Length: 119
Image (tube, rainbow, N blue to C red):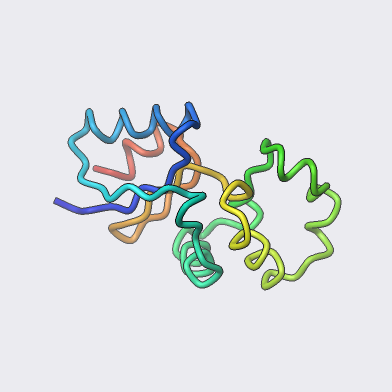
C-alpha cells in the first residue's frame, strides 16, 4: 500500500470531501495542515516538476488572499523563483488539497482524476 502526503486546510469543504474520498478508498496518507506547515519553495518546485503542471496551477485563484494581492495582474510579470517564494510565504495562496506520492502530484480535488490516479 502506498502512503501519500495529503496537504489540506481542514476548514475547506473541498479538502473535507477529498479526505472522505481517501478514507472511503482505504488510502493511507499523512495529513498536513497547509497553514501550520506551509510547503517550502523547494517542495513546491519539486512537486511542480513531478506534476507536469504549470506553476500557476498551484495558486489558489479563488482565495481571498490571491484577490487581495491582485495576483491575477502581477503573476505574469513574476519569475518562477518569485512565484515559488510567494507560494511558500503563505499556505492560503496554495491551491488545495494536494496529494503527493507514488510519483504523482494531484492539485485540487477532482474525484474522477483522483480515482484514476490512485488505481
